[in-house]
Length: 118
Length: 112
Image (tube, rainbow over all chains, first blue to last red; front, side, top):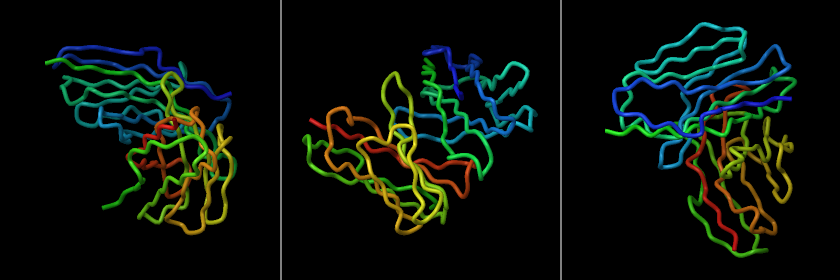
């Protein structure tokens, strides 16, 4: 069965600290997709990144970076030099299968609430 | 601007009074879905639609209906709302499965 675990419920850091949000997933499919979404206090869900199971390259986008390791079923997210505007709930999500065999159901972790203090 | 629009943003209603939450996307996306977000439970899929006139149940469909008569719209219907349907609802769309899902701004529903 698919499952996404975000073990860190809440993290609090001081501005300019680096912070890593952990995500561990479970799936039996060989084809799957991993996502990170940000939910700021205003409530909307903002797409950050999508990775497919065949692409283990790490990605960097400005202060954000993602480390995908199939060997440990993890897809961790690091924010470098955190800022107050990074304060939000961050969700990791998993979707299985290809077009013909999946309902496109995003299985979300329970989220990690990040608070960045000035 | 490419977006998914949900209405209303906030709604308080009484038990049993039928309501519809609208969802519209302007990106010509084939795939649309509905999620509900509850504290401690995260987000769970209610219904999804692969294309016009093609809809199917997600993980928590009980008490909900949907329709997809045209590509851009995917309304969520609560025929007889109950307090356990108090939640934050999100509509999402994507061109096809498993690419970038765009979410609406959410609808906070309270059923008293």
